[in-house]
Length: 318
View (cartoon, one colour):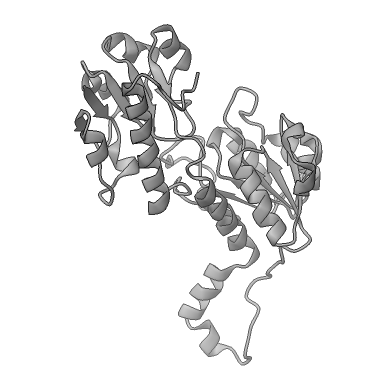
């Protein structure tokens, strides 16, 4: 059994082991793969594992021996699933492996705006406290999370974990989801319409998948509903946000700020209009990447592959 890993560096920059995968397959690892290299690299392999390298219908046609695609992520929009289904190619993903890490990153971004710890620490490093005539000084206003309204778009594993953390901070939590009946009454989360989500939230955090319905869900119209002091957080997918409309809202101070771990095009392009805006915090799609999280991801990737080999595939996307 031959397996090609198209972008091994994404999961394992050198601190993890591929040994478990190699126990049952002859593996070829490529740290990165360009789209035009994909078909040639897969070649006659029966299985391919990918994080962000797309596998299209055209590639499937060029690789007739391909029987299995393992996605090293929860989202699988890089795969033409319908084409795979027609060709009886099994496609698996790894659900819920990054719940804790992403929820943690959401609040890291929120607190960067609300507590300003980095800016204060940098000012102290630059001598600001030495020069201060007082025991304390106010460089920038800070804000309590207590009593604020946390709006959550999407009630999956990450959205529900973010809600619990929000409650721990004493926040009021509201949520818009396609399936409000799945929100337990005892959770203390109030289901709301999409319009209410945008208009009522002091902090709005996005946790829905990228679909035709959610693409550009954050746009000029929905941004116009938000409070002027509202904060928008995105650790889901970049294209959920219309970045042109968001840039205008941020430059006009129509909302307070934007904290994101994802962009519409990744890696970031030099032309990205959000880069350098003072009320924007961008991290390079790292919310999922603590070592413990990647170890969990590696384990499930191997389990998915083994299950397929044994004829009982798990975590199939169709």
